Figure 1: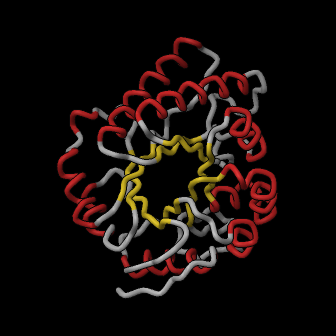
Figure 2 (figure 1 turned 90 degrees about the vertical axis):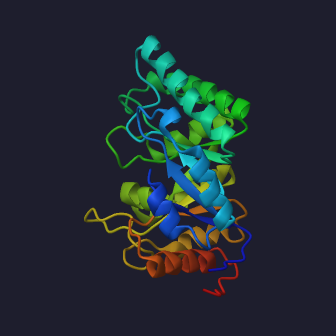
Length: 260
């Protein structure tokens, strides 16, 4: 598959090098998940580098899903920064370009935690800079510990942190109107996209076209987007993955001609 584009179109692969090997061909990058408690010594960096080289693909990483960014306890916050800094350092050694961080707090409705979150985000961002990796903070406001879209946008702007805008998550939180408002207010902060489709009944990470998201709203704000776009569809079916990549390429007004 060949998707010439202003944006680079990649694929999330979870924490599986097997899935990366089976699905990455034709994509510009793989986004590899690092689980909570991951021991970097146990990661087969050599195999990872060979797989990416064989596919002529770059690497991004996703930091642990379950670990919140901010709590009311300073010692825990320090440990969170230390843990993520260790993973970011490893990511830098294997050439990762971007690292995705969920925008979460122990209690996202506690306004007293918002400055703590900002401090945490700045500290994690400094560790990413030291590792040569761009930190991007992802909207997960539809989840119990996720910061609301507008709160995340304000804190990202305040800390000069790039955003990973997850279109499906935003739809689950506040529909197409939420997607529209966030991109109207904070679109300039978006460096990385997660694209998939969802249904309001709770189905997520579907191929684009199988759900309810209006990607025309995304195109209204991000046509010609020059960042990175990760297809986050939970299937190993390569034709479905290719189809979603082609659909998002078309939505972002890029050439989606394919030779695969």
